[in-house]
Image (cartoon, rainbow, N blue to C red; front, side):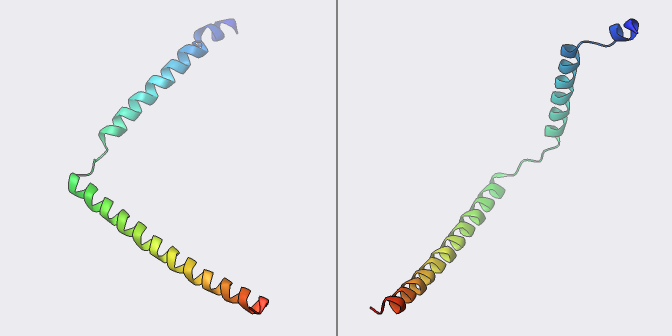
Length: 80
């Protein structure tokens, strides 16, 4: 039993091997990454900005309509 335990490396050696393996795997995965070109980045950025603008306008319109509805309900209830 003592012979089996002595063959097994200590926790620090095992942890170091796991960390080294993780870095090797990460490096091999990063080699597979296809980075976008400058034109793709510009195109995607413009799409995101346009989407933000459209959503912002929709929220603004909804807020204005909801405000009118709430103000109308308040006027009906108070009789002003």
